[in-house]
Image (cartoon, rainbow, N blue to C red; front, side):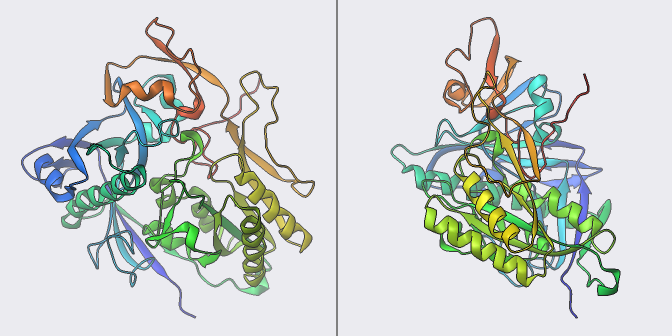
Length: 425
């Protein structure tokens, strides 16, 4: 029996700087800024620039669209199949990864559904991107550009920039390697078979991920190999609230899939990953739930993990998949964040089901915190008051800002990437 075999060649990036050429030496990524801008140039934008934000700096990136880890296929020197590469090698072969840095895109498109990354201070502890060296793309569109064209163009420009950076890794020996082969499990071990439902936004109005370059609205639930995630088969294209969106970086580093991989053939049989779109239409939600569970049954799943993407109406998808699975003998665990309001008296979930008896919360995104003003703002600082989670009095005028953690990128990410924890009192 053949298995998909992918090796990630990890190059650790310890610092990033601008210089007269792009290369990596002793863990330092040097970038030729002019060459990079020329490489990704797009007539839809009147200005394009890059800045670098490092952990610990008094810097805020606002408003953030997407975060991408620079990766490149060694064989094709491409990445993101269907967009910047072909399809033959996705999930197999060798992929170079620049670990420790990310390409971050900014842009005021949807206004309230973008977010912030603080590189220091109390906001940084809620944001896993604050621990990375952010190479920030700032691009202002030509006047009158349609928001949907702006949205797609800025995201794809970020993919191109990340690929340009990753090419510098081809000439460098990796610091270490990770091998991903999902081997056949001997039935005699009688390990529980666990499947993973990879839910992706497919709601229109700039709320659509892309799968192999195809808009997620145009697909039905499909069985995928987790290695395809590592190679950029799924990219972020949604504008849900900052705290709970899955960025391209999150798909590339999906921690749930990695954990299932780690336990595969030891504690469990990671029997399949099902990518399922989240629609706004009830009949499509019901269809996708039924098909997702049908695929789980074909995988022989005893259990199904279902993490939410976004918040609000996607909770209906979670509960429908949960009900279909439980009624057909598959145990489920759902993962979602709660939003009980600032005073904690609102309903924490929009939809519930008596079949949902195993629920993991990724945190409460209604909590408000006070953040210091930063010495440096990258992007458009004036967007702060418009972000989802910013109260009307977010700028009291004393040098601080008051926001809900909903404005912080990935603060209650339902893949489990977030930095939340509980405390004993």
